Image (tube, rainbow, N blue to C red; front, top):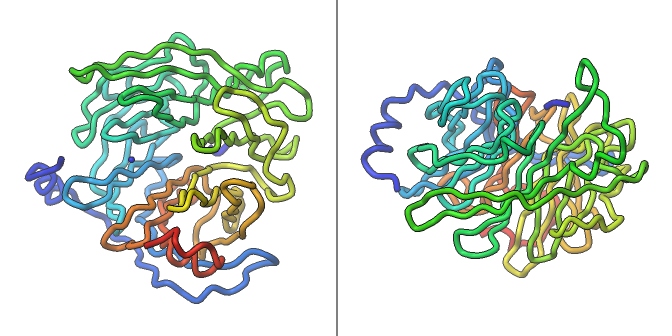
Length: 365
């Protein structure tokens, strides 16, 4: 398993960081790369850092109009922060350990407001930090989670959330044996999360769910994303031995019996993100983790009908992705960020995606 205040402090930080060179890739005309798959050139690719083993991504808009792109480094046990407009590395956060502010095999990551949620597989917890200072606020799940990977956050009340965490525990000496079907009802775990007026964290376990039928169970899970307006979760099952796809659940944990078309994914169904448009429509973007080039599949937000597919010139073996639909100086229509082969990050201009796939024009500014 391949694995949404800054002032002078940020200016000092940026001055102190030594940004490695990045490759600026000028947009190119879209050309067919394969039947039904179009080509969109990456806007940039960050410098390669193979030792990090990058996995998942989240974006955060800073107070001075910049965008931070935050990635988890599984092997380095830390976070890597990039400039979302250029791909330049700004800083790293953490290191291996179990103390607050340290990480052990960080995987899934999510931003909500000024809170950063980091899933740590080998600390069996979700750690919460404040932004922009990355101050640890606490953690939860260490008494429940066994092998957590992905995360999606849904705000139910002001400062009250439900965190959905995928838990892909396995058996066998090599941890490659899928548990008995009866245990697969624990594949997604829910926690009610609150922050009091002083900013203190409180989290309570709210149970687990997962289908247990042989043909539709969640066997190997990682990526998860939701759409509260349509009462929908999409959960990636990466097990290619049983047609890897994304299965549809309600927010209450009920399996609807639907999944994305299974013949959409030639490899592992991986990262998934919701692209919301102003009219209530939009698109799901899902990764097909292929080499030599990842394929990004788009599906209608409401009907889940296929809406087109594309690949870049470089991006391959993608795990995580992040969609930043807000305007930035470099990306007035927003950007799609993706991990490339565990060692770098790439960016696509959403205006290029809309133009190439003939999507709804109101989805970009």
